[in-house]
Length: 247
Image (cartoon, rainbow, N blue to C red):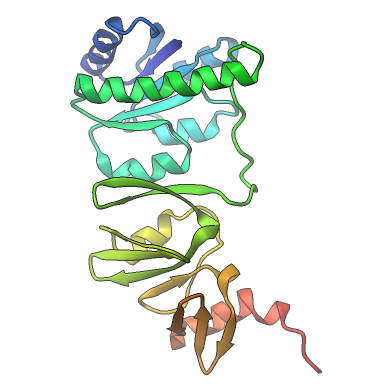
């Protein structure tokens, strides 16, 4: 696989290059100290895999990735684990926290090789970039970190998110997961506007509403109170405009 490294730290680039030297299916074809140079190169060249740092001068790695129409498979490399959720929202392949161990590096690139081979098979043996999912596509996915696991879930499967001091509970119709993050921060990192906060402690997915009665929203397995300060915004955005009633 043709690979590029985008990182402003020379030692970090060297570390990835040294790891890659021992892996016969990786070919580092270019290295860049900033995303602007990488962007110019990608306009005229192809890479199968990109190792991308996040915090860099001039342009943040995540913002750079968002701006690419057909990005290579991407493995984030960073010293800051708090960016994991934002990274997986962009469908990155993996997330490596510096300093990167060889065993963790191997796990990530093996995953890349497997996906690369699947793409070649689906394209008649040709290595071709896969287009990003349209931003308007339904059933977008996110990753949440719960109990030391990165769990992939469709946004449409989330029924409700409940805040509990320093963590939240994310409920689907079948399971629940705890995430070490406060409710306001979690809400701010959800892509799009498909979720609504209806109280100090609860965010809901309106597509799962079954009934609204006596200042409560009924969801599969849940009955949630609507907070007074949140009621008007919720009713205006998700209920009144769809309400069929006699004038």
